[in-house]
Length: 372
Ligand code: COA
Image 1: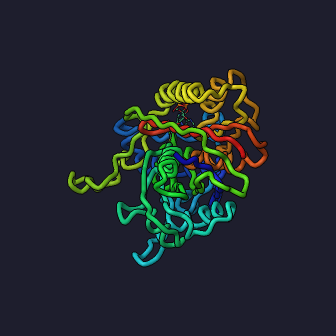
Image 2: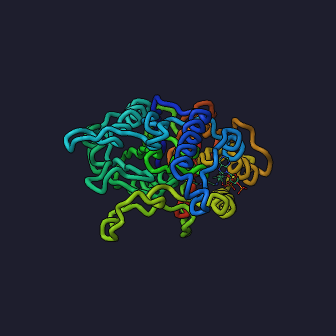
Image 3: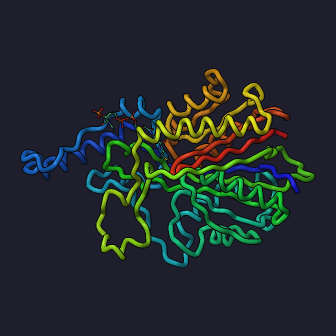
């Protein structure tokens, strides 16, 4: 069996930012217009008026202060309330492949690896722009990598499940190097007209390069162990899909976008994740005192505070358990990888850290790494 290591990482961050204040202003303007347009039905109790959102609630409930998006003009137009992304012809790069390039190239540059030396591109994300051809194969073509590519989706856990799949292929000797890339266009599946969730998501793309751990010359993270688990739940769900037409259901129905029972997710996922991490660490002989860094999924600050405290048995410092969700919001599978990319360079040789992502499925994935 070979060993694997993370030798490079990259993050593509869209330049457009929506602050909470901008978001709430647009949402409240939309709510006022909708209420005015439906005044009669609301007065007759046939419809419920849309309530206003507030920046204070968003920060207190989630810790999110702003989000990066591919397009803010559509999202902030009270008559549109979704991003506008230019339609691509079949002969130009797709949206996901395009945003993947910058993240992948940064990961390759960091490791000093040429695209031609990569054997596998694994595009692991919550949503895929199309069913086929696989986005990963398009990225492979645009980068000029060798071997093969495939897409996978385990929602918010896609990145860690992707790292596990790539690591296992390297261990088995099937491949020598893999790029695991997570282009997340969360703004396109978020329901911006629902105040319960309109603040949750942002867009980003992350990538990690994983290589066989043999004669590596650059600083890297040894992958000591990976673990993945799933347990079915309907509490985070999206019913859009290719069977829509067969049900004569082409209208813009609420469940075609991201849906969640936030409170239930909170209650059910926290024990699942805490137990998963504790079991993984115990089985690998990693104690709380050994763990120098915890790069968690970035959905909610209260959730992360809770998990950090459970895992370490005390309140972690901001350096030990870095959050990036205040700047990026929830970026689905990419969140823990942004945290890893931004907060790992300072670790000393021999330091142990754990990457963990969790979400719809339910799903939870963890990766124990050691700085080398
Ligand atoms: N502005 C003002 N008030 C709002 C609001 C908004 N944008 N959205 C909801 N509220 C109100 C609710 O209507 C509710 O009012 P009520 O008490 O009168 O019924 C109150 O605020 C509390 O709402 P609730 O949904 O219970 O808030 P919460 O504290 O659970 O926070 C989430 C909501 C979504 C931030 C939180 O549940 C969460 O993070 N859950 C897990 C999410 C997650 O990890 N999902 C994975 C996605 S991949």
